[in-house]
Length: 397
Image 1 (cartoon, one colour):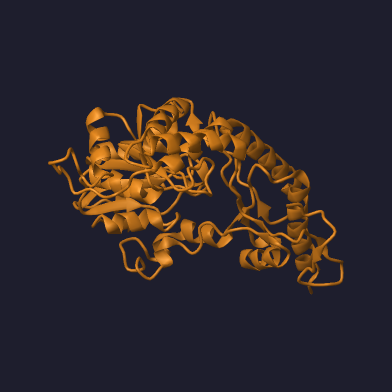
Image 2 (cartoon, rainbow, N blue to C red):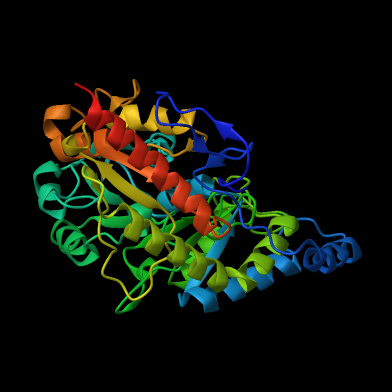
């Protein structure tokens, strides 16, 4: 998928020539596919055991491998990230209100609603993407039981400050770490923070099991609870000990994950190269702000967010449409805010006046395509589309 091929899609405004494009569009992400021939032995193992799900041997092997790769105490696999989040909330026996962010994928708040919990929205940091710890205090009521924070784009939350608030008020802390696979601060994996952390292994993520997810935990008792919850609460052939759900990861997904893990470090290194080139090429375009990388020991380069500010002379939405018309499909992660959706507009903290930073962020954010197979000439052409938009916008009377 190269933008430098012979075919072209005309730009929105003619007069300066078309921007060279391929017949195939470039989307915000693309799954990394391991060598097909290396997947076949895993399929042969599945065919030989005839075990397709229910904690099969590949499932067990993947849990063990992920525990070592991530450097966490324990991890419980699930069929997807949303079910993992639902199980985490259920395992902590939460009630009442949960403080959370409006700047996330809708599943974060949906999981609260499905769990019978009331989301209370809190603004994001002044110069970041995550919950503002300083704003949490004012949102706490006698009904508050927990904080559900998100490590957005793999940028770690201020976990120490969040934990300080939680400890002073007796609250649980859950991290939606869907974007944060493999991210480490100076103390190790950021998945160790809070009471529980959840992961998504969706096809769009840095690490994927086709569909999948996980909960990172510490205590053996919590592991058992999480295992019970994903298997209908069944303890044995005659006992059901909890109101569980069917959340098991199947053997096909586990096999794909094991093979993905083999190439993961190489894939993240390629993502880093894409990130570096973007930063170089975008550095002189007025109105395009590239946030600095997080101050972490290991980052996963899962997203490439930029902010389109007033200096660009074209709105973020204008640039978004211009890029799509020229064959590049970025995403406005996350726009609109969760609190702009009809089912959340009347929740506590949802008024735009209470979320000025999140509102501004949602109006400026644009995530550019990033994945390991994105070649240098693809990136150069993507930036050329942005630069053309800036030049045409600036030339307008």
